[in-house]
Amino acid sequence: MAATMATNRTMRQVKEVSSKVQPLTKPDVMRVVAADQTLPPFHDEKLEIYQREHADMSAAFQDAREGRGVLAQLYEQRNKEVLEALKAMRAKTDREAKRQLDRLKAFSKEFDNNVAVNKKSWKQKFVTDRNEITTRSANMGETIAGLDADIVQEHEECL
Image (cartoon, rainbow, N blue to C red; front, side):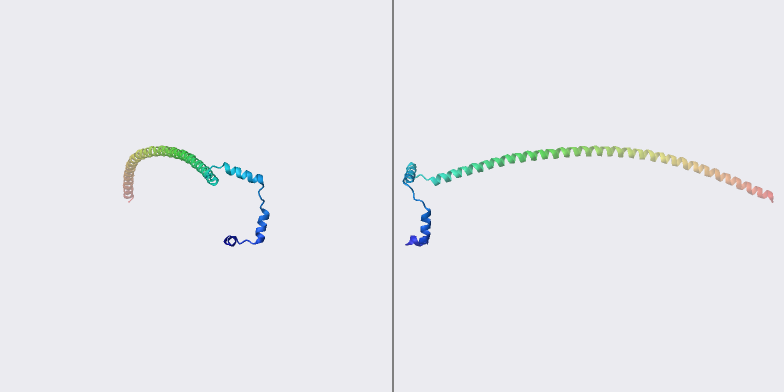
C-alpha cells in the first residue's frame, strides 16, 4: 500500500504509461542477458563513465593550463618588448636633452663673452666720449669767456 501511495498515480495514468512502454521481445531479452554476462563481477558502468568523463575534464583543464602558460609567455615577451622600447625612448630623449643642454651652455658662454666684450667696449667708448665732451665743454667755456670779454671790451670802448 505504501508503494501505491508514494507514486500517487491514477489508474488512467498507469494505463497511459503502460501503453507507451513496449515490451521486450525474446531476442531483445537475450541480447540484454548476454551483455550482462560479459560484464565482470562488480563491474560498474556508471563509475567507468564518470571516470572517463573525469579524465576528459582533467585533460581539458590541463590543456587550458598549458594555454595559459603559453599566454603568460606571450604576455611576458610583449612586456619585455614594451620595456625595451621605453628604454630606447628614454635613452633617445636623454641624448637629445643632453645635446640641447650642451647647445644652450655653449650659447650662454658665447653670450656672456659677447656681453663682457661689449660692456668693456662700451665703457671705453663712454670714457672717450665723456673726455671728448668735457674737452669740448671746456673749449666752449673758454670761447664763451673770450667772447664775453670781447663784448665787455667792445661795450667799454663804445662808452
